[in-house]
Image (spheres, rainbow, N blue to C red):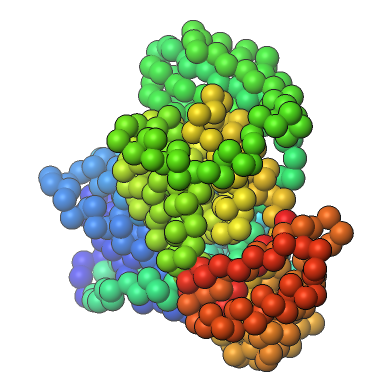
Length: 558
């Protein structure tokens, strides 16, 4: 036994409790990974949360001398840069809120820690555009509430943390009642479970229990996505005015301005310091946004664009010409030795898919996707490498979108995230990419809308027996997903592909594109191509060797 923590935390204690929390995530990451809703090879919540915290702990090794301020700032930035997947991003925001609350203290008591958990909860909710209860968000919220109650009665950290942990566990156990999809799958929320393991680590450290955590080398090829449903795509331009400005003043408060502008729209970005804040917002009331900003200081570089009118101009008057924008290799050659006005960073796995992205004008491809969620730092490195002052990021996976959005916080370049959630969406969005375009925000919006018009089908395999939504699926079955939902399954791969394609094709579709994976032979793929060409003579059917892992076939219909 080491000495337990009684009534105050010092800098070394903060390091200790987060070291134990990280160790508990590492020890239990495979348990967390197994808590995926669908039986596809996509459970990586444990790995993503662990790698996020491991990144933060690695940064702490360089902190000397120790102070609570330095430890908190380092933890926050380390978690932000190391965040992987939606679960990692949300965890990084919880850490950000906690450390922001604690960093000004010389010594931390239970009341301070309770307030920090509350700020962690608020930061996590703020990070998610449409918060979903029954997730890690609910677990941190209820734990923070209990912490406030316990801080009034317990000055000793051990009984305080015991009660907070008990509340977190109780809330986690209730998550299947809050989210029907969890109840159907017979699991609790994976992110919430990860937070409970972290709280267990906190308690062990506070009790003075001697623990040796042996870090395993992360096996990135085993990591995949957990269906959390935090992000929902819009199907139209809901907020019509792209409003930008710079605020100049004294003692400007970034968080306060975020709170005041958030109800006015979406795509809100506020960056800067206490003297200069740069604001970007999509809203239907730009006048009110300007009024709020003006109350903080003087305004400059005001820019308001009517995105609905500009979008109509693009779509119907042909400002984006597909024949011109597809010819990306000539654009790449033109800018080869000089800075481009805007560059594109994309995420992909598979030699064939990477080559296609490069042919469509992508400057930097980050290795990753369904089985390898790149961190915010991985994406930032690619952004920095791109020879352009403005960069568009295509995540191409729903579990990478939030990490991409965090690049906007830490990059000195102007970043536009087109929230593509599949490889076909990434390809389709690039048809509207034009580095000569004057309004890159407008172009990114148009790219996002093009992506939303693509249907994506995926064929993978079931990693375990399961019953969900009246589906009785056996381990090893081929499993077809249509836009993220189970469409069909069985033992015959050809039959599965036929059924999936039939459910995607309609009277308005014209093009069927198939990308076959690393485990599919060319002859097998060509047989399927011939079959689909015969079945859909009025459609253009195209076949490419994607070389992707995890998915036997990726299918797009446009």
